[in-house]
Length: 375
Ligand code: GMT
Image 1 (cartoon, helix red, strand yellow):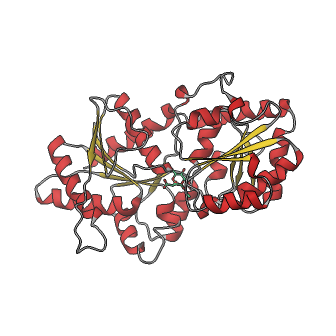
Image 2 (cartoon, rainbow, N blue to C red):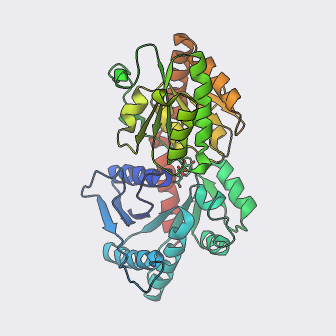
Image 3 (tube, rainbow, N blue to C red):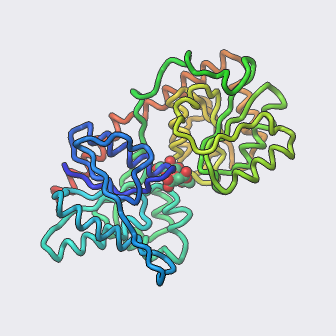
């Protein structure tokens, strides 16, 4: 198949999923065309089956807002025609499904029909799309998609509750390529971050309010009172600076390392003992799955789809949003002895196998094939 993928190319779960999916599809023989404003962060594998088409938005001083949707839909028309694309897959409803629908309509004028698959990722529904300023356009573009998928049952339920959706939504969970994750934790260079007797706790996110960054710091504060530990904070966002101030106020600044955005997530997870994800909303929690794939148990909230990813008492523990004391005592259950940590590490890795790429990518292939046949 010839598949066009539209996504956000920067750090963020939906872009990562779209990129990894495109790479996996290309390895399975499909021709994949990424159409977005920048080369996706994880797309370092340009080959004869992968193409990247940049969407340029010319700056014009008259415009207060430059019209990205217009440039994207025009680019889609050009690429779909030039490469005879069979199916268009847009990740994140805003504004991709809207631009995709416009491209479909323009192509129809020329006698070309193409099915559009829209994958909902979370914030496009729960945080941004639900805003009254966007809601009519988001509802319209979801209903006009030929197939709609969501990354968890929880997100499907939220979408049906918040919007007037006429389409059936198919749940296709996010996935992980376990073959790329090193299974031996012997060469992890822990010494770079902590001393021998310290546990290493990690948080990775784009540090927005939804990630409850103060709860990460407060949970760690309670943990380090009981056992020697370091906290590694990976990512950039508006909550980073206040978090740094909080670590100083609590007197733990020397135990918390802020690394900023990193392309070395594998190395960081390799030496991590525990992952914290106390978010107040999380449609899936790809970062938690990535942690588990490296054998890192997860202490998370029970928001959104997290309970579909993290299993209580097996891959980690779940608490109510904001219940930092509970999160800390759960963390200590895992970290207290080498035996319990080793057991949870094994179980976390086992949990990740449920979301193996080889199980999930064929689900998308099936969706594409059906949509093309119906078209
Ligand atoms: O929340 C983020 O870190 C970014 C956001 C995005 O849109 O890229 O992530 C959403 O999509 C991910 C991939 O499907 C999910 O794993 C995240 O749970 C989801 N974020 C939220 O729902 C807050």
